[in-house]
Image (cartoon, rainbow, N blue to C red; front, side, top):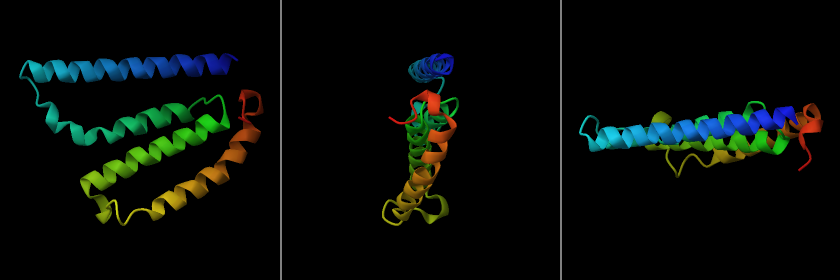
Length: 121
């Protein structure tokens, strides 16, 4: 239970800090000190941060695998939007097969490792 409580505390702190950062960015934009439109292409990286938060000290195997998916989606969107490695929405679909396989392989290991953390949801 202590692990689950610390996980939820960390999750709430992360969301609070993300909202503070977003508010500061909007305020600086409104004051003319920064152009917020320049930052939007980094938005998918917020998903990476959220996903990493889900995988660290996770209370269940489901949260861990959801965290992997969230990190993947964030990195994939960033790579597609930035045109990294020639990835597009049309040619990068095999990556979803790969991450599905990784998630399927890792989840039973996580369930066995964290039996006490509601690993069989």
